Amino acid sequence: MRRFILILFLILSTQAIAQDQAPILQGIGFRFASDFNYFHLSDNNDLVDNWYSTGVFGVFYRIYAPNRGIELGLNINYKDGDGSGFPNLPIIMTDFDATNMQSVGMTALEADLKVGPRFGGIHPKIGYILGYRLRDENFLEEGSPNEINAWYFQLPFGCTVALPTSYGSVGFGATFELDLTNVIKNNTTLPGSSFRGGRQHAINLEISLTFDRY
Image (cartoon, rainbow, N blue to C red; front, side):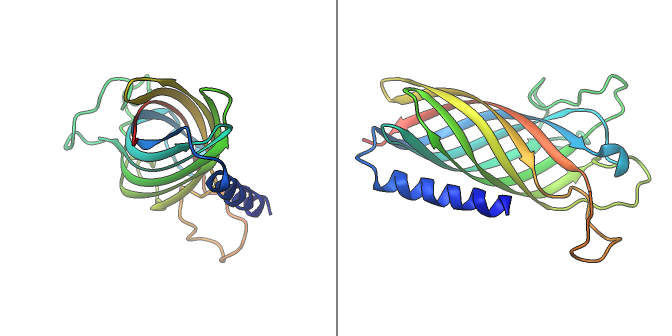
């Protein structure tokens, strides 16, 4: 029921923006961010316990009306785990593990939609993130028989501040990403039964550049 209400809210918000007066900003932007992730219920599912960060690069299309805004984007979410890929950037792609035993790796593609009111350059947002893990490394503790789900679905709750520039705007934002899907595949219980397979929650910090299309 809560998911249905949220989806209905997003649809109505999108329609309201589309029917509003002419936008004051409409353009293509680029997002440079980092997700600071942790696994909820890690102890019950053999998931690693410590926080880790992944780098996020994305492109989005943003429309700001006088009192509200909408943003539709595509992201690449990446962190190397075994040392064979693109080198990790300090803090942006890091395992926060004092023992240096954790080495999580991930490559994922994400699509997101975010909507919300605007108060000048301040834009609170809510929406969805649909992601697909092309690669996952060392999510699980060594020897675990569990398997990782490729798909995940998150609800972002956050806010950005957009400052005008000669070409569009530069923005800064913070978002909490609430995962609604199990990280662990449900291989032990019947379909539809209650199963708690862990969640990959995250705090996202971003810098964005938007180029006005006019």
